[in-house]
Image (tube, rainbow, N blue to C red; front, side, top):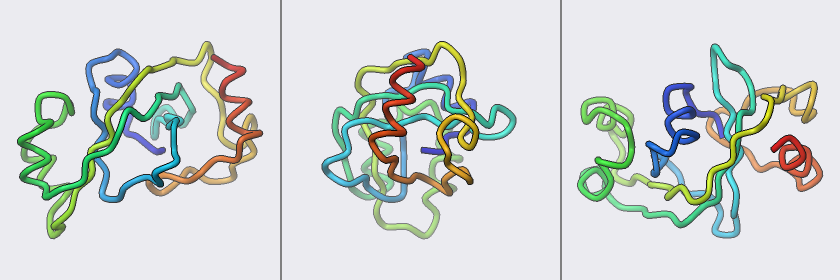
Length: 130
């Protein structure tokens, strides 16, 4: 999952416990690999998915505003024109010992636009770097 560095590091530090997205993850997703975008451009950790909540942006904000590490104006700008919003509850978080390159270490040629599903053999490489 591509996450801006400010939010990626807040997850790794335990300050951000909900990741806001426009779409739900598949129900069988148990882990999210954190790809910190520019300027980091690296996989920096992963977290377990504790659950997902999908509702209106206003309802999601009311429920999780204190756990998302995002300003109200930025939150509503992100969901502008949308009637549904998803909050992914962050479970156990693991920071990698060293950042991984998407292409060199994991064979992923391009960062995901939002998120993409990683094959188990590539996820095993992330686990080995923890």
